[in-house]
Image (cartoon, rainbow, N blue to C red; front, side, top):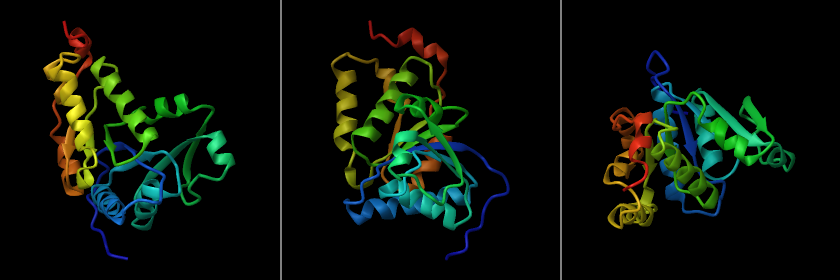
Length: 203
């Protein structure tokens, strides 16, 4: 195991949305591992979906291996079919998926989204909607490994171009291509506040 030199204090608590599928290209796992190591270096605490497979598993495995801090949040029915990561000791079980998503966003300093399927997209888009309404004000960073989210970026741009959203809403998120760009993007995100409700509807 490579030695990681950590900073002295935990700087942030970040929620990570990512996939549970294992049948994906190895480059997605590589990017997730690199990002997890960056989190550990900066003593950043992670909250995630609690899974043991796919990118969720790689994220947790890497953080645990290098002595980082990670919390899993998962509905009871998922735990009952043994989807939970056995090595994550800080674990919270919820009654529903809705409760899980709400708890993801409690007392965090930002959201990072890795490539994923419908569940990941749902979590990301709900968070974007909450930010548009000023109900969530923290940074949202989207790791666009291999251009995976190029079409999403275009769709969000279309929302603005066709006047379904305000041009200022493009400042709610940041797309980055490389894991090393994630933490700087979190730190340099556009300041957002509850006043966003005032232009949530593009009149």
